[in-house]
Length: 116
Image 1 (tube, one colour):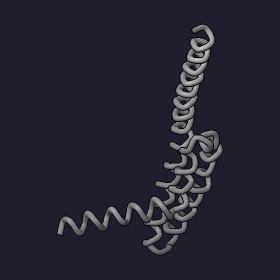
Image 2 (tube, rainbow, N blue to C red):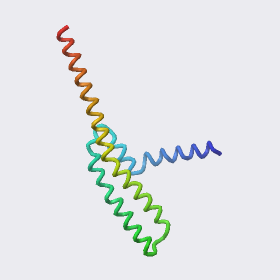
Image 3 (spheres, helix red, strand yellow):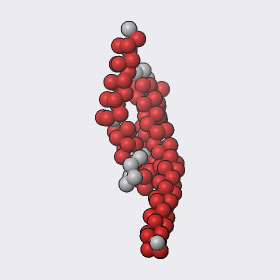
């Protein structure tokens, strides 16, 4: 029983990771080329929160209750987009520091070859 639940959750996570738009965007931004797009991608949080507010108002005025799940989903996606900007800046700084260290090591190795 536990094994089947574990396998189902693993496959569900894989499906969501591969095919859901926000997860695809997060994976694209977390590449070296995509790190510069973290801050503009943060702006996508605004439409998600506007959709959540609009749906919540619709539910309050007598809309179907199952829309609460969509509200939760849009809030979750909006929060993911908000975090994408600061995280991408941290990752970009880390990558640039690493690249600078690599360039410095390469330059030192070249000067050692020339001298020696």
